[in-house]
Image (cartoon, rainbow, N blue to C red; front, side, top):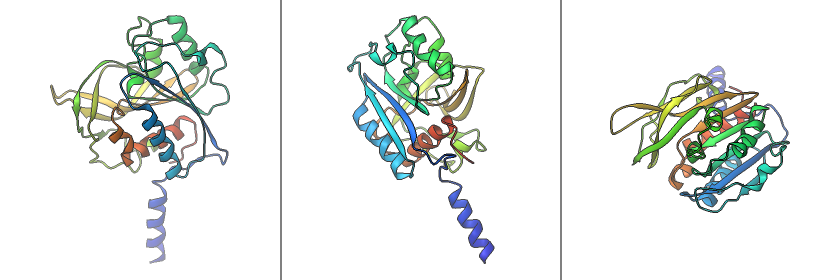
Length: 248
């Protein structure tokens, strides 16, 4: 009986995110642009980390208005990512095209600034002709399908990020992004299927970019998704993994 109880306890604990360090997680959240309720999403993210007992020190940069084109002042500093364990990109600036501006961002990540990229970050700088941002993301996407409730198929159940994720999880109403290219440095963790043509697309993945770790998801359009407990669990575990703090 004692062994049975201990095994049950350990199985429950295994589903909880565990950090390697007792130090607070230093997170820079970059958000803003068109098409989404970024204030709610920021609040939901903070609540998710707090509910899962992860001590976070947040710096939130929400600049650039609510259009599709902006260059925020943060990136004028070549050391803009210094001092953070991970940077969360949850912005949407599809029509910003300057190669010099984009490379100021990707250079910091290539040199070791870990990242989490959410939803419209995949379409940010979409109009640019340079691929630096897309290589950093690990995926190339230029369009999405209609909103629906999409079943999520876990394809890497052994990965620490995916441990404890329900195998029958279906998203709240959200957008399925069409992934044109999965870069060689990226590894899919879960996929969803198009309701239009049946094609399968990565919706959660990891990417090795230079010296950094990147965790990405194309979901996160709706407030309902950000309020979903499974989505929150994945964001927290993915962020801890990117920061090098997640234990299986």
